[in-house]
Length: 412
Image (cartoon, rainbow, N blue to C red; front, top):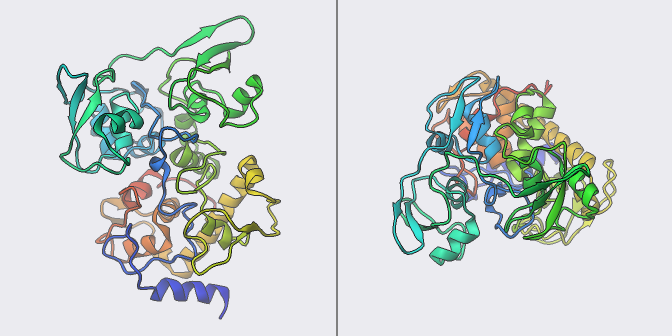
């Protein structure tokens, strides 16, 4: 049996139902293009070193740029389009609009916290972001053991030090000097990627200026030097939004990195997914880069296997995490591979059609497959939107297909 025949056989006849796919009996495990399926970006804990939604605070004000949509901005901020609309009180946007956070409904008491009623589809990370606090603080106050321990209509205690009205811009703690940099005091739960993004600079620039060997080498109350060309205010238009309007492969990859890890190439989450795109063992194995023995060797993401000789120059996981080029090259290879699966399964016949309120495009399909795998994409398309797969964080495939719908990836 050829490699492609084996893959298609697994795809078409596998009857094991994965938890993240609702009402489907198809999920091809061999080519989880996802770079981590289910995608776990919002599953980081605040104490981990990857820059993710659980610790990144949403901007108080956003100026909409040409090409921006609710879906693209929501994807960059790592919240759902519904959460974006609720946060900024909008139903539509246009270039030039200035969006401001609206006051959240909560009940204040004298016990050091406010009470917040969880809405359907909300995540703890999103709630923390909108209330200007952290996941760790909410979990501690509510005695939660996991960030997953929230459900609709649950009433959470929100630390009263957190602002439930974000109509004013929060000033960053920084000191300007004449040495070509400003000084920035790291807050609990912050990551170097998040600090770089909020200050309109790069992780590499901060690491070089501070003599850091790793993006993980920061801790609360540490004073970092920030290049003085970077803005120390929480600008509503950071590199993420600016690059999101570049509707080509480079723009697609940047938006995807922002969604997965806030552009943190050294990221690793608690489920073992690594890098800017959150690669899983299975994704690298599918490209012939990684190998591990066992009956189900790639289910744990423990990286206990070995790196095979490959054309990408990867010799170790640590080296891979320090190389932007290697990660970008691998991501492009996975996109090409997934596009090959899409064509083999004749899924491109759905391009231009609208299912469940979203128009199908090449880049949208690639993004959708990244979220739930080829099996989930196939199920959604062939059911004409009647079945909507979700990832492990309950994010529906329609969010990704919509947010990444208009990129020209040059795929033929």
